[in-house]
Every structure is written in C-alpha cells, then in structure tokens.
Amino acid sequence: MPHDGHHHDDHAPIEESSGITEFEVMEQAIRELLIEKGILSASQIQTQIDDMDSRTPVMGQKIIARAWTDPEYKQRLISDPNSAFAEMGVTRLDENPEVVVVENTPDRHNVIVCTLCSCYPRVVLGMPPAWYKKRAYRSRVVKEPRKVLEEFGTELPDNVKIEVHDSTADMRYLVLPMRPDGTEGWSSEQLEALVTRDSMIGVKVPSTA
Amino acid sequence: MTPRFKAGDRVLVEARDHDGHCRTPMYLRGKIGRVRKLIGVYKNPEELAYYKDAGEQPLYDIVFEWKEVWGVESPDEIAADIYEHWLKPGGA
Image (tube, chains in turn green, purple):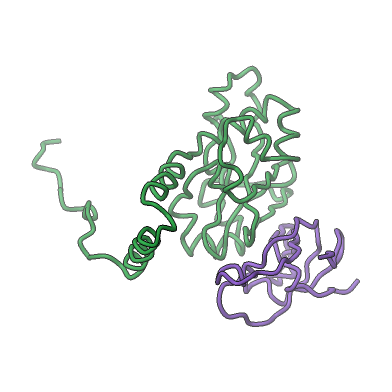
C-alpha cells in the first residue's frame, strides 16, 4: 500500500491533553505530604512501583506449568500457596494479600472477579488487564458468566459447573487451569506458553489448537 | 474471637445499608449461602479503611446457589468472602 494511503489521525492522542483529574491531584498532594512529613521517601515509593511493575503473568505461568508436571508441587500449591510461590522465587509475599488457588476439574470451572473494585492476585500475575477493572466485566460475569466466557471464545459443556469467585475481602484468587490433552512429554517452556494470563483468571482455558 | 459459624452452616447475609468502605456486595445482601470454610480472622475493613482501631472479624468463604442470588435455575455458583458481622443463621 502506498504510504500516502495511510491515515495518521485515527487513534487516540499518545499523550492525554485534557489536564489532570481530581484523583491525580489528590494522589499528588497526599504523596507530597507523606514525603514532606517523613512518613515515606520518594525512593520507597519508587521501589514499590518498580516491584509491582516487575510482577508479570510469567511468574504465574511458571507456577502453573510446574503444577502440571509435579504432583507434589501441585498439592503444596493448593494447600499452602505462599510456600509454593516462594519456591518459585516470588518475593515479598508478606506484603501482599494471601492467594487461594482454585483448581479447574472436568466438572468444575473457576473464574475470578472483584465486583467491588479490582482485587487481583498481583503478587503472581502483576497488574490486572484493563477489562478486568471495567464495570462491564465486573457486573456481567457474576450474572451471565457463560455468555461472558463465550465472548472470550470459551465454550464450556453444560455439565461443567461454573464457580464465580468474587474477591470481596482479604483473599485473592488464582485459577489452576487443566492441562490440555496431548501435551504429554512437552517441555516446561512449551507448557508455560499454554498458560495464558486469561486462563489464570478463568475466562479462557489453555488450548493447543 | 470465637467464630460463630462452621463449615456447612447456612447463613443469611444481612440486607442493611452501610455508608463508607464496605466489602459486602449489594447483590448478595439478603441472600442465603452455605459456609464452605472459615478463612481466618482479619481486621474489619470498614474500620481499617479510616485508620480506626479496627476490631477483628472472622471471615468466611460462602457459596451461594445461582437460584438464590438471581432467581433462575443454573448449576453455577458464586463464592464470596463475607465477614461474620454481616451474617445471621440462615435456617436449616
């Protein structure tokens, strides 16, 4: 296609030009006050931001793939998630909310949501995707989960019971998806690639297709 | 504090209003569920959010049947974590 056939003005501006919001003003004011009063330092805040940014679904992928190949690890992951996470190098577990691992089985599928805000197993998955925080997902998945899952391309047989976990309080939930058939003998790297972020939220299932 | 409920108990989530920070979703208020387990004892977020000297509350994993919450038949279920001060015995 010739270059002059492109449109260059279709997307949202790269930088928002509408000024800062009320919440941004509030955040900035509180942050500056905390620093001024010596309660927190700027470097402590930055360390915390860096720590959060360093957490990605890759950690969850490694944990789930190991659970698929190591039955004893899987047992520990379900009975004592923190020790299983620590084994895989997850740090600062004490500073993060506790995680409950919910296992998918041939007749039970788990999906997670936080209808009240955006609670998410950040310690092993990092920041939630934008849709997870949207009102549409939060209000619909507790009311019409099969329809929402279909929109993600996930069709569950009628005999599979869906359990929607609303992360209302101190616990965070992580879905342990089922290992797909036909993956016997696959390497850890191959298995990790099957474990998507969305499958650990429960809106998708790992697939070799 | 000694937890009032145990696994298997039917509990009613109180249908009352609450101003300020609260972790009991509206759509489960007034609904009956079953205690799956006691999760533990945690500081009450309704006080903790305002830096008050928060008392502790047992927190339960409660499972709700679809029909109870939405009035339609379905094998699906909703599980939520609810603090004890929102729960009453829900009958046999």
